Length: 611
Image (cartoon, rainbow, N blue to C red):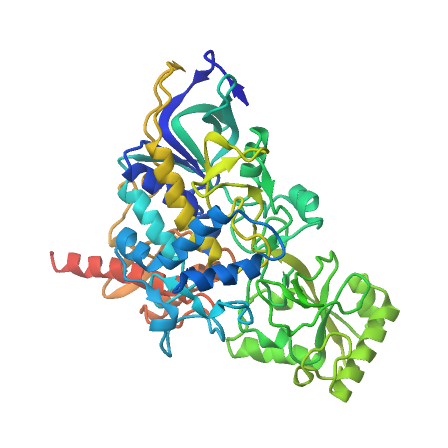
């Protein structure tokens, strides 16, 4: 939107950062450390900030050899174009990542190839790189905060840096940026409109605006327009709705690789279908969905992928390229009763990491009846099973090349079953193009004055994605954007300021405990070890017994983390001990609960001693 000298402003900052994920948090931190007064804004409510960084594996891409990593990334991008200077800045960051961790986090990073030991809580990897056949791939590596992953630890370190700089950073959560404000005379970005508590605030940015709002994983219309799919199920944050794309487009930004997105899944790029506005579950190590009398079918009741394929963020080999399987609207897993019993056994053994699985199963006495329930052609489904059985018997999948040992013939003497699948999205890569200084470019490849971007919004993945690359660019271009915006000369024109906004930091205000009511023999305990940050409990404890545990605050991942929050406190009370078994798939949440309850019990014991 255009503004002029008559525009009325509600507040003034040096730098406004939109989006509080890894990129936005990093940008705000470095802008503040370079002397700027910063406003950091995020659409998520308190405890759900963090963007996709919070939900990611926490693997940060790095490299040991500059020449080899360039060669590797050229092949990842081929046959598409990219800006050489911007890619150079990106890959320089890869090579310097261990120094980044030491200098800016105060941490000697856990480097996968050097430090990984048997027993570490890390996902198993045959190769660190996703495309080991590409030249130079051997130089690729991962840097982590410690020898665990999928625990939001990198995100918590970034968040802690924002808190550390709270004197220079205000944080508005549950607040959505709506429009960038562009001076009609100079073309400079002068501020942003933010909707907070159903009121619009015109916030002036004296130096610059950094847009780090992520992609459009939760915007069905943008998915249809840019990806040509009906609907994708998000695996990360539920708050990335494409706001940054809309805002930067309004001020003339040039977009690039808008059709590129990444996925994961229980099968390549597919998860079990969920309800509206629910995250998909990325269930790892669940081999029974891709081995046995089981396969995936599309809308017409026929197979459409090699179910056991090695998939690179959802991409699988197809005719000399690596592509995401088509996003079908009515895809299903189909399996026989022998396979069903394998899932039952997994559940009994505590290995089935998806508690709602059996609620989602559709069963029938025949393939024709099952096809009707699935809304697929019965003849096609019956022929698909017959063909699959023939492949399994002959030991060769002539259609997709699935491993013979992974195929078992269907036993049609008993019930047959199906579970609905949904195409998934981890993150989108498209958005406004930026240069090596993180400046947003217009359609003529010229920088839009005082506008920067970082992270997955217009990220560096042009074609094939290498895991860890997005987190790396959050750190690399978040720092570049924050520093460069803070160093600009401020806009000195007098503005029409209507009053003075109070300083607000929703991040700090959300952690105040002094107004929590405590009755007799009640004590607070907290832990920062949860995947979403802090878990706060109120424990009633006397006569050396845990009488009651109330979880007052938690920000754990929807799904299995919520199961642990519900179950573990009850088990602790029943056993009068925090030494209870972890909920399968939610060990991080379980351990954080134990730590919080133990902290409260320690306070109770000290209180009884008069300490």
